[in-house]
Image (cartoon, one colour):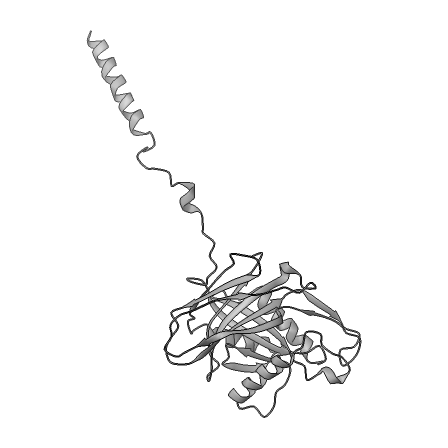
Length: 271
């Protein structure tokens, strides 16, 4: 009888040990839906965006190296804290030297003249790179570009949101703008992965590759120095020779006098 009692105690003890070693079933598994990231069309809580503009031309023999620098900045995104947003604006004042750049427009040359006034330059030139509207230099200088981008990233930007509810229409919403300066809201439609076989001029016989070529640039509106928010809808139509998968929209807010970029963001229809 004593042996049966001792055996019973041993079995109870073993059962207690086995129960204590089981996983704690009071700890719930995190539902899969709580781990899913929601895709946003704004740049809130992301890397600091910096706008890099390159004034270039297919008729300029000094421009291809700068085009490659712009491509490297766009594709490699060398600064981990920055989203580098690029624009290639092809000017038209090289067109009379034997090769007409099909991407060029007088409006881009005029924009460059505005920068020449800001930076107190005697004349405009190519290739010229401008970072956040505050720094300009020869566009083929990668090291200078990276330093300028790093400095520009120290200044925070206002948020821009995009949305498309129907084809051919883009909504742009800007919020929490800083007070102090009248500004312009611009929208550039740009295309990547373009190539041109140049037949004449200084780059005759060369095939030039381009990124972020501005196909169209629109002024969406003005913002008074006291306004904090801006919202608009813009209609657009892609040309038949543009590849939709390579097209992107870049919206930015730029100070009227200082040329400072207060906000910038990009949006892809298929991205």
